[in-house]
Image (cartoon, rainbow, N blue to C red):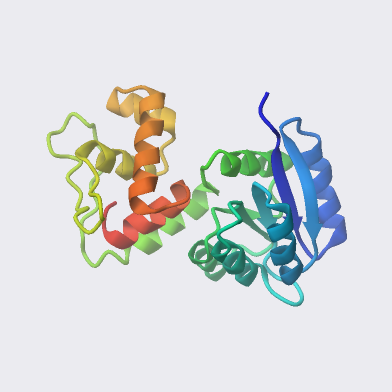
Length: 233
């Protein structure tokens, strides 16, 4: 049996932290190992606890969650994935969070099942964005590609459909990896990609792992952001 996912909760409201802890501690595969009420406390505690996942509020005294995220991401000892959890559905928070290195973005009015799903997704190395947030991410970064065409969603049987520019990478993507990246950027799941490309889910996971390695990305969310910045998707 694998060890439970170790979670640290960061929020300046003690009642909210208690609610998150209650929800997460009910899960047999999740363990809350610490809480922080300020950004600076979060940075210090993350360095000592080394959690797997951090849920991070934005507006806090002393230091906000975005700066705390940047500092935690800059500490090479800390491998935690960070989910921004906020009351405010604001584009500046969303894109600043992704730029700071967050792997998820969740609103505080989300249901308990969404919080649990987000923690599990981040622990598995995936990102967690609500569907409407994903669309806004793609629209924003698609607008930054300076006219580079984004391939249309169509069957993999079309010859050359995966021909995406990747020469800028130290190790260019293969045609199959480029095709998988395009589908990841369209928010397809591993199961959907496997069905579309007529390959097994294990093969998809292998391709995704190789893509993350070549892009230098921590997870699927960062891979999508980097892919759009490089004009790869």
